[in-house]
Length: 115
Ligand code: 5GP
Image (cartoon, rainbow, N blue to C red):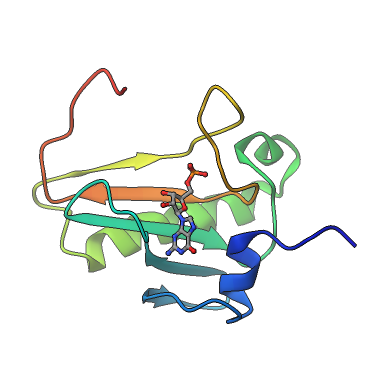
């Protein structure tokens, strides 16, 4: 069996994390190396390796996942001033963990274009 990614270990509680939201579908926790005052990762409990997998995923589940991302951003108090959602994919996207995750970044004004 392939080795678990760090996020599977986090989901299995083999590695500690600081939870901010959890339900039957997703787990959201603070990034260990925050790039903004608020930096939270949202992962679906059903594994996809990256954003490209969404091409073949159930559209309803994908929609529910995105809805959870918006809900978590709201619960974090970011809605009024805004926030950025990032999905890094593959080598050029600088994806380092092969398990799909949405970054929620907030609490400061983001730069554009991104680095
Ligand atoms: P990626 O570069 O794949 O889009 O993002 C992976 C993110 O996971 C990075 O922002 C990194 O800081 C975060 N990360 C890596 N290992 C851990 C960990 O063990 N715990 C937490 N909470 N975040 C992690």
